[in-house]
Amino acid sequence: MEHSVELKRAISFIIEAGYQIDRDAFQILKEASEKVNLDLLTRSIIKEANSLPEKPLFLERKLIEKKIKELQTQSTLNQSIIITGKGSFAPYAKEVESEIEVLKDPTESISTTGSLKNYVEYFQDRFRRIQRILRSRIDSRDSGSIIQALKAPTNSKVKFTCMLREKRESPNGLFLYVEDLEADTKVFVPSQNLELYRKGQRLMLDQVISISAIKGRGNLLIADDITYPDLPLRKTNKANLPVYAAFLSDMHVGSKMFMKESFERFILWLKGKVGNRHLREIASHVKYIIIAGDIVDGVGIYPKQIEELEIDDIYRQYEAAARIIEEIPEYIEIILMPGNHDACRRALPQPAILKEYAEPLYEARNIYFLGNPCMLRLHGVKVLVMHGRSLDDVISTVPGMSFERPDEAMKFLLQCRHLAPTYGARTLIASEPRDHLVIEEAPDIFHAGHVHMMSYSSYRGTIVVNSGAWQEQTEYQREMGHTPNPGIAPIIDLQSFKIFPINFASSNFL
Ligand code: ZN
Ligand code: FE
Image (cartoon, rainbow, N blue to C red; front, side, top):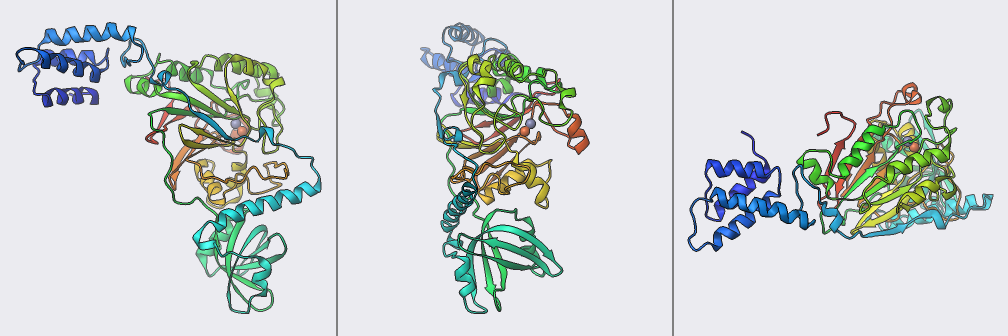
């Protein structure tokens, strides 16, 4: 017979305390585990047994029953005791004070005027910021300029920081057309060096890297290594309490394919109303919900969208979203940012969702409305959040990437230390005087959505998580051959960095 971890732990606790239990008492404990917190129960039983004038060998049934009753009445009085059974639900997270700091939010600082000067300034700013990151690496600390490299004597080794402007395949390798703040040049990557050649092929346009090369005759540079700024090896920050965050995105409220029932099941779960003991235990720790954009489906976002809309008015879409989101328990903090379907400018960085459209949401409950991308700190854990439009560009241009594993594409962006390397591709980028898309600080958790595939992994200590979607496959996705896996919410324990992917779409959810 299979016994729960809690029950096994309770039994060994009793034995260690010097007591034994008979079959009868065991059965009572087993039944009690459905109703009360077994840990608390065994502790109080042992405490009482220890205080008896004559310590019994066997724990009596009467004593156990008395303690169960006490605990049951106590727990209705004292909400901080968690009942893990079918009874009332007193969530741990409710007792924990929230700790949110917004480290970066583009909402206030967006300033573009759209002039060509801004475009130049934008790229110069990107170059300088990523150069600084590269210089903090031991292997590219000495990375110089293109002019220095071109002046070096023939056959000497050179190293320089540059931005990739163009890539051209040739019969024997790859030509990289690169530039820095003063000059431009081309670098040859020979296909004989297969590993390096592949590295070169993976480069995205406008990405900033360090290249080490051999200076040939004339202005010829032959690459022998390419260095990404990448994440440093470091100690990640973890919470000192078992508080959990739920990562969501791409609800697409207003779409006929919005999975209302699954989302409602998610909210019932948060309230402790559905789920087995284990799932309810997880729910009781959820303190934060981060929604990485595409809350609503919007209107006129893609061709023939109107045929797939249940609500064809953006204001009413936000109203419907507000009616759902206001059901989330008040002690849970919600952080919400826009995606490409929301009422917001398309170009990155995006400010918070516009109040004039999303008014019902602003009025429904307390929500942190932030821009895309943004950086937060929750109990010391640094969380970088973006919607993820640029993942389309990474997946369609970098060899080896796929829509099935958006976390791999996200990892690539961490290596580039930039959230949307290529300018002028599918991802619109506003040429702000400052590049808000450089990943200046290494995050502990990197969260994105947009691709509608829940996937996660860990990279150099950072949890990389794509939160999937709450929308069934659309006609457009069918045509593109994308099969999403919607309705699964990854929940992360900010203390242990354990991930619990919970499938709310399945009807056998218990
Ligand atoms: Zn979406
Ligand atoms: Fe999206």
